[in-house]
Length: 332
Image 1 (cartoon, rainbow, N blue to C red):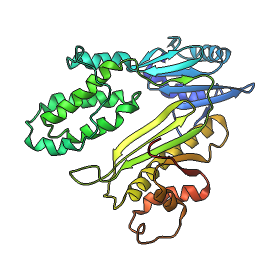
Image 2 (cartoon, rainbow, N blue to C red; image 1 turned 30 degrees about the horizontal axis):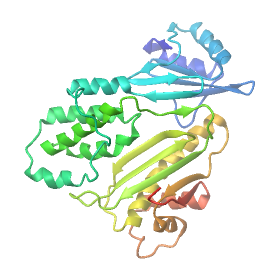
Image 3 (cartoon, one colour; image 1 turned 30 degrees about the vertical axis):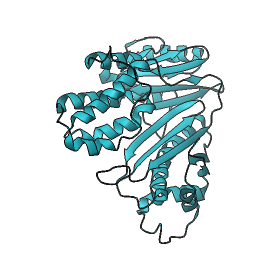
Image 4 (cartoon, rainbow, N blue to C red; image 1 turned 45 degrees about the vertical axis):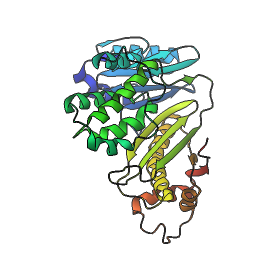
């Protein structure tokens, strides 16, 4: 449904008063209410409004909203801000296929030869090879990377390489543009990829985190990556360079897990507010045994006393029982 933008503030007041919705503490644009043990969730985004729940609850809510505001019912969500949502009887499948085709057409890569991977196995050479490479068009490069950044909303498998290439936006070289076009060649063969959420799947929240120690050739900083899985597919993910140089693999992994734990707090608050039940402890999967030992050991020793204080947030979460770190083999 869509409404007039000036009425958004008045709509928020109506939703939380007359219609009996409660505001979620983790996100001020999410509202929910329970009627006869059935939940109705309402999401308000600018002048768009989305409802999810039982059909009869949605129909009743739409009538109540239409009686107060001039609104247009657009039916099931299919396309919104470049995001496609395919709703079937047994699954929901968000993707950005049409947006991907638009990117390929815009940069004249529709007829390119598809690649099986989004990047080469070693991106470190981007910094080494750039010294002998010609400069690329910075405007074109920024437009391409910016377009790919929005595509990460449903394609976490290109998150790392987009993060790596975005670090050369100020002075892009030809080798960086070639690597960016490598992503486009991968997208050409995977236009239909997206996130699949089956109807019947276990609703458990777990996380995986990892880091490449001193992966940046330029400043020797590591890159953190994590994602959260709710049942069958990921719901949150990120990849970013760490702010300080890690002195060991364990320290790099420890920082990555700490960054992921902050996202875990917000997700737990969001889900607990909606479903009225705690989502702790969250299982964190890590492929470094030393990182796990650092998280459970409150003693500061020579190998950890220099770590910045805010990264020890993960240790506090483990001691409280909110997070449980488990080892997973790198091969898995």
